[in-house]
Image 1: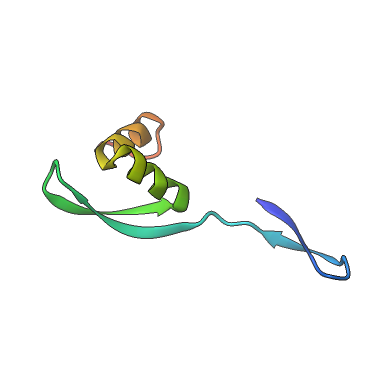
Image 2 (image 1 turned 120 degrees about the vertical axis):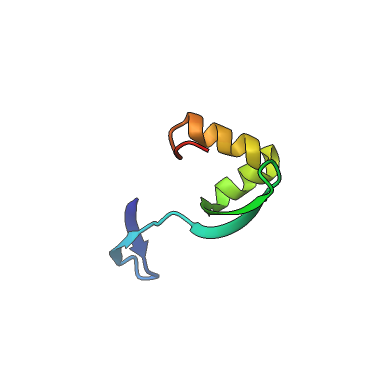
Length: 68
């Protein structure tokens, strides 16, 4: 997304708003292994709320990831 960075004197310059993505390592109990995922902060909260297996299943249903 693109917007404006507004200074104290109301001078506007273009600014890019990037997604807060980072790499995180999770332990996947069903397969007894560690997996590395590139998740956003919102995705991390979803994984904490639903659990890793259900979050991966929902992401696959929405087309964000391939086959688990």
